[in-house]
Length: 233
Image: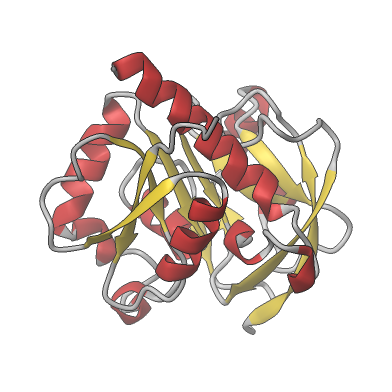
């Protein structure tokens, strides 16, 4: 029996690069991915989850995600998240979520002051989330990164709070490619329905590409979106 395919909206901003990649990868996880233009004011009817993809929205003028945060569709995304909807921000999408106040902290220029593009190893810190349910705690994932502003930081109080409330979901294992505080690669909000990550799971869903570890993240999201859709029917 074919599983129910939950509808996952993938937002396309001016300057998005990985929207079609994310949509393809989600479809491979038995989800119905629907591209949504940034100028829309509503999410598609029946949306079970939202993905903000990687790229350089609005050319990263001012700073990554600073302008995209004011795109018309973001009001709908913020409302969706406030109602408990699942939202995943990847790379530039992570930056947008931080700028919009849906996630704590900020992403600044890499400590090396250079663009980094390579595979990294991540350590899974939590598996009790909608985004990591298919992972095992402590599991190592190999997923690529490609960013110039991926250095996650915040003041000492915020970083301590993230540790205390277990909001760090993924950490860089071994090599810290951008200088992120506490090797942070991914954080989640307190309610557990909004997560941002700098690595690109959509580029690691087939072993022919070097790794299929990203599929664990996207399949987890598809599972949770499927459950949310069933609950709303």
